[in-house]
Amino acid sequence: MNMRRRSVIKGGLGLGASLLLRPGDIFAQAQPLIQKKIPSTGESIPIIGLGTARRYEEVKTDAEKIPLRETIRRFQELGGKVIDSSPSYGTAEAVVGELVEGLKIRDSLFLATKVSLRNIGREEGIAQIEQSFKRFRTSKIDLIAVHNLRDTDTQLRTLREMKQAGRIRYVGITTSFDKQYGEFEQTMKKETLDFIQVDYALDNRDAGDRLIPLAGDRGMAVMINLPFGRGRLFNAVQGKKLPEWAAEIDCASWAQFFLKYIVSHPAVTCAVPGMARPEYAIDNLGAARGRLPDAAMRKRMEQFIDNV
Image 1 (cartoon, one colour):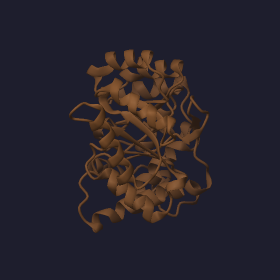
Image 2: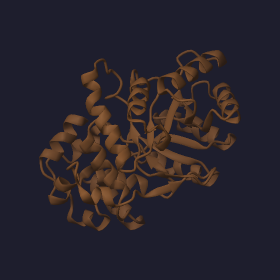
Image 3: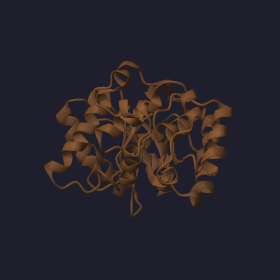
Image 4: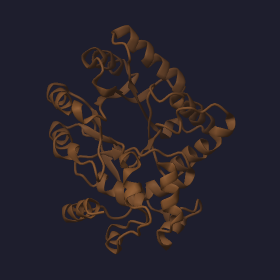
């Protein structure tokens, strides 16, 4: 996806995009990020966060950490807070923990991760969660969610105990598999959760019909993974210019076009696109500024991508 995205950027997206991608961009630094509230507490978080899958998963050298450090630094400088990870993302938790500690920015961030087990069981879950605390180099984690409904009942009990003890602030569940949507929906109806995390993109809208509205009804925050459809959306617009009407929602790049669609859903709290380069942090956070699509514009965006 990074290669495809670089090609789209190099292909030229207009003056607005080229300005936005400059690290010294005054406009990007001046405007505050749009925030939404977490329903269970009323706490506000920016609508765009940072995902750590793939590019943070196999980091072996200090040289490989340099662009990631600059990405996190730039993300936080521009007002970003939410960083999402998982034990299943290889070195991601440890890399984030090391870089955040070195930058001395832990208190300004909202760190989220998951309990993601191969073998089910209470003790296995506790051991993995404790390892996440060590890798993040923190005594408190803002959100831990049961990943892909693996041993959900047991792990939620553990997470709630840790929340009661003040070690975790929020608990939730995640999925990125359509085949789990039925079970996911039933779990949402049965459990009291602070967050859900699901896959949702302009070309993958199923969760927007069932799960995301249900979260709104149940008072659950919604975090979105795979907002670029595993790179499908960048592939679809390769070599194409933004439509002129994208200016009506202050879009300067395709990434912003895709992300603004997601975070304009009334029940979506934030999206966590992967970011491993500073210019991507600048670009993506641009989706948290300016105007967001209304219902009519969202329909127009859907029709556009369906016809590409």
